[in-house]
Length: 228
Image (cartoon, rainbow, N blue to C red; front, side, top):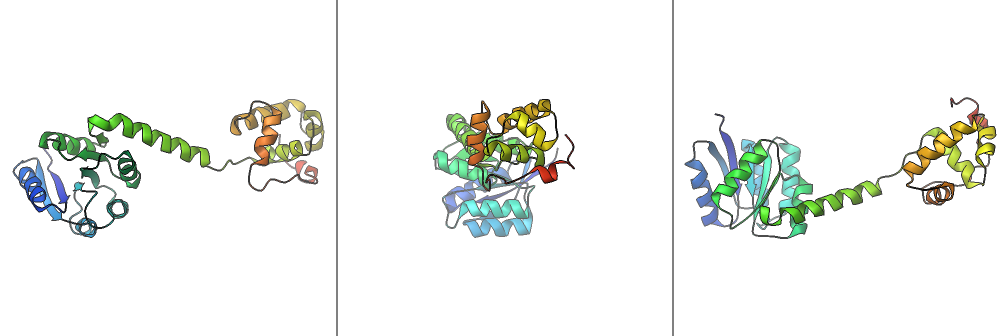
């Protein structure tokens, strides 16, 4: 059975020593470092590269930035936030920074052991009492990020959008770009999906909100060399 190396970082001396003692006595784990502030956490990584770091969020220094630094310098180290904060915002920030687990203080050593084993296996652990709220918040953050991602159009889509912006019909677009009207309709379907539009009017409205779009004076000069 492989032994999991662990480092603990917490500014409460009694809790820090107590945790270290509990896990040092368990043959499945090896305590390789202890610290009491964010800078200690980063320094411990360079010295010992533990499999897991149990890190308090409310200790001196920026714990969230420490998590980012640890993940950059030792990406294989799994970080478990062990904190008294039941703040959904803190949990989201910890996971976005790179933490793999979030355990509330007051939990038993059995739960902390379970969290360690789960993150070592590559999974994520959140204290069950508020896991559903954290997962929902993380999902909302992910959706907001995806909605802000810039929309990238192909060269052909770009040409069609620019012609739509100056009022061209599908038939006129087909003639201008020297493609079939069926091909234009195919691209219109793709554009509606990309721009989340239900019809050509909404495609035009959505396109007007895209950065850098202005009505083109003429797109036919480059169209002849493009494939349908």
